[in-house]
Image (cartoon, rainbow, N blue to C red; front, side, top):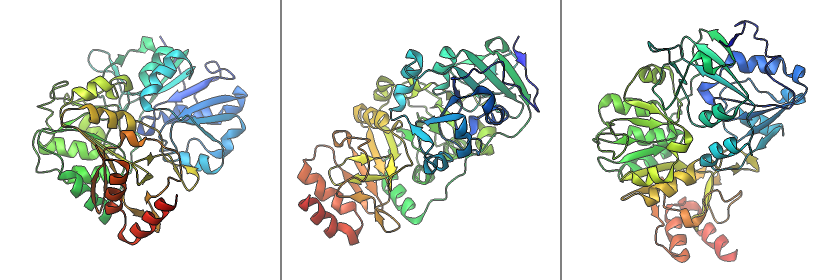
Length: 417
């Protein structure tokens, strides 16, 4: 049986060693009592490293860098404060590479902190809000510590745990964290309308994070038999399932199942997913598997970007010199959609953010997605389908979807470059 930790004052001293790398579920899957205890007790461990994903809490703050080295695959959410303070190191890898890095211990995970649901009638503890890269970490971590949260939803998944799989356990009764739902702006709704016009009945969707994917889902209420295979699942997916729009009935694999890696939404999403046999969370090795993605006919991958240049190169990581995004799974899904019969690899973004162009002559950050993998780029001004186009042809198509006031300047800047 696992060691029982005091819920009010969990002592991690005998479980974590100096130099350990600690990982926990990202976003709403964060086991708050454990992560807060870790930060409060950090000086006891001399120096440890924490691997972060999307961060929705204030658990990790810049002052904690006195004893903690922060590493993350993304600069999203509260990670931005760590970026501004200069205390966050970035792991620039594709999302699909994380399981292999953990299993090979190129990225060693020594201690895994989990938030689990209470057991079902068979004694199975659900991983609740996240599977994704937690599964390879489970297989390689020296120590597994879990918060069993009475209010965490029991979500069907690829794997379940029992108490025998844990080294220590803490029992809690608290609402899990929730993800803020971004309100789409007028430009987002125009972009969503363009994308929705491309999506046929029976298509299977992957959706990135943000206002535009949410707006796309809101524009699909008249479709039939859509499927979902995505890294993340949000409130919009649940709403289309409740309307009967998402049935997954025509998917060649996982028929009848909405498949994702992590739930990123509100309490309403958590309640909908609780013991719902139509939702299944899977590991990153499965959700991002290129052969699985290619097998999904009419697979539509919808992802955002910081900026796209006139030849189709995509930067999803850096804006204004700061790391705000991620390499993430965009390239995995775009390539999957490119291989899918009738698939659509889509990158969507507004042509401008304030006064800053996001369709640019030259990228201001790294090339996250090379132009050889570019598919369709969508702004509020239309759709640029770059597939099969030469560089000269691409420039004209991209100018057509840039902000009208910037087109002449962009064309001149590109020609001068």
